[in-house]
Amino acid sequence: MAAETAQNLEALAMQAQTLMSVFTKAGYDAVAPSIIQPADVFLDVIGESLRARTYVFTDQDGAELCLRPDITVPTCRLHLERHADPATPARYCYNGPAFRYQPQGATASHPREFRQAGIERFGDKSREAAEAETVAIVIKAIEKVGLKDWTLRLGDLGLFSSVLDAADVSPNWKKRLDDAFLKPQSFREALKAFATGARVASQSIPEDLLASLRRDDLEKSEAAVAVYLEENAIELLGTRTLSDITEHLIVIAEDRQEKPLDAAAIELIARYVEVSGPATTAGDKIASLLKGAANGAGMALETYDRRLALLANAGIDLERVTFSAEFGRTLAYYSGLVFEVNSASLDAKSPLANGGRYDGLMRSAGAQVEVPAVGAAIHSERLLAATLKRAP
Amino acid sequence: MSKLTLAIPSKGRLMEQTTDMFARAGLVVRKVGHVRGYRGEIDGIPEIDVAYVSSGEIAAALKAGSVHLGITGEDLIRENISDSATRIRFLQKLGFGFADVIVAVPTCWVDVATVQDLEEIALPFRRLHGRWPRVATKYVNLTRRFFGAKGFGDYRIIESAGATEGAPAAGTAELIVDITTTGETLRANGLKILDDGVILKSQANLCASNAAAWTPELEAICSTLTEKLAISVPAKATAR
Image (tube, rainbow over the protein chains, first blue to last red):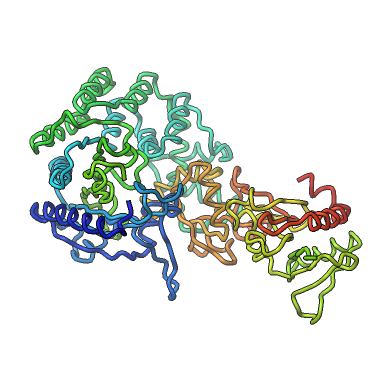
């Protein structure tokens, strides 16, 4: 749907007014971050994969700039400008355009210019409460606009980490699987490699160098690497330090010593990744999976259950909520809860709204520390199309 | 009748080697008019108009169809024309201008030998340094396509116009994608090629533009030219 026609422009403006009034009444500060942003922050945060979808340009002074591909990162930057201490609690809401190149060609539900109305909250200490509140406000705003047939889909990137604890995966492999979880392809490869204990890469590193490395003596290990470099007349250059290289070599050395993951752990991980369905049954499924786990269920399910209880308290009908363990794996910067709101009148690949927890983002935007952060954005054109009960 | 336009490199090694190749095929290319001009012709084939163009711009001219034929490196074609498979016909490998487009990292990265290793260090690097590893290159599109096909996206491209191989030592990038012939410059700069880091084995090619206006007469002249040139191409060119 083109926003350019006068009628839609008016309808979009009215819709935005309604959404913003719900946000401001809930105590969110209305802000309007710049549309043109330094490209650096986005490219450093999101990596080259999203660069291809961001309109990046160079101005007459040679500065690399971009049209904001979302409003979350600009809001983080605005927060950092306002507060010397980035952990200062704050709540913001916004409404405005964002821009993304659409590789398959721009369409009505995937336009290159779209409006986002959203909220971001920083510095909340009670995690699940902040998450539940964020979800509840988004749903409330959507309902206020007149859309009743929403469904809510949840994922949790943090829960996977707890599942690995429950399965008693060694710290090294836990870290690797955690990192790889965001990339389904390398995740499958990593899991396969850990099942056999084989390590395909890095065949070229001399065995005696690896054998001389000790995690409990980094200094000695670094010295060993330095001697190796010197004996082979290799100059140490670049921004990766001797300790960066040594640490990774230690991980490689430890991987070689590591026992293969036992079949029960692999089975548990593989079956957890497949969990998908109504949120309440998914919880039961995960519980039964964890019952036989080496370390028991531990903390894993407590967060899950508490979050659902908080959502129910906030008036959300749990019947309309689904959970998928895989969901969120390919999204850019989320670190815990992820969610999206769908409507039956739009296809599943065009959610009305999405959001989640992104504790690491503020640091990438320039803060010295991690700051608890939860947020969500509503895709205005899609919401309007859905409320008008027709495909966009 | 209209003429066939052939773009050849206007300066440097590529121009010399192109002239030599024509000479071996018994063809003399000479400039028309002013000695520093940019038009030329081939003795004995008056239907061909030669345009001297800087080798970087030959790809653009082929892409737009403003010339029928052009001699330039395959690397430049693949980099500058995203749909080169449909826009360009590679008529003849020419046996000079050899260059491999490669991924190179500091030799001191003894822990990194493959793209998969790069993927493994990207996140720890970001935790320590607050950003993804940077790749200095002028081959932005080749780099993106190559890493994309391997499922690696946690890096940042820094566009580099020249002296790319010095970027890691200067601290402006962590690794590079660049061309190399013997690997000597890489070694001198303390860099090594990843085991699976050869993106493209390139050489100079005679290319035809599908976007140019072709007639049966022009096709015939083109065939005459390629037949004559084929004689002067060493066997090793096509073996590559």
